[in-house]
Length: 292
Image 1 (cartoon, rainbow, N blue to C red):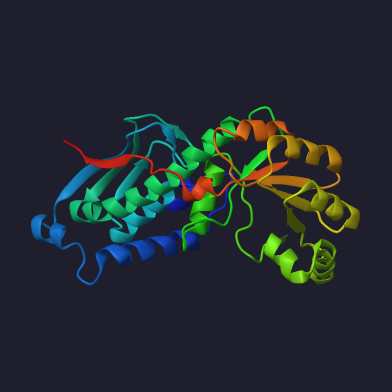
Image 2: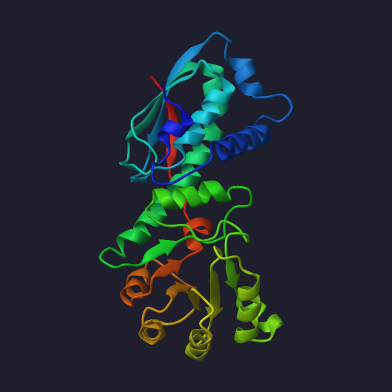
């Protein structure tokens, strides 16, 4: 029997509670107070139907556990057969899921299920395009906290489906000292001293710098595990790698695009973080077709 968790990408965790919560909220938004009055008015209760969730473009699929959870929440009598699981590559016209059961429930679930698959597959497909351009380098491409409010766990999971990695899930994951923290705290050394005094032994500290002079100051303190190199050009990134000599991890960020990612990866930085993976991913084109 197909269950939501059986379709998860095995190399990325997504809590079943997160799936259930997202589906509940989405259906509550769509069904309102009276439910799907169109299907109730036009489809007899006993009608059974078969449908297929179809990819209308090529790419990397994600969000199938949410589609299945949506269908099952509306009717336990719906049967689903999966032809691929999350993180699988699909081609245009490929049947991703075959669905059979009460027609009303299938039609009611249609848009919510497609919204999840379209949004998350779009993120996975864009991430895969970025990752492909870094092949042969050590660099990992990571997402950011620039996610849709309430959908962060889902969107970060989709990044993993596309071969990317996750940055912080929230403000409580790690200490990331940004330029405004430095300004308020009075400089790089004071802010790092305070961060180090507060951090537990398992909490890492990363600090953002805008210049090589700031990077040198961070290196001299010896109090950070990673440095975020903000909006630096390729030549400056190369010099940052040379200066650091592997003493801490380097993350490039700011203005990262598909056109620039290969050159950034070639500089030798360890990570690139890009908000575009989540905030600018186009929707993946998919549809639910009723069997003729």
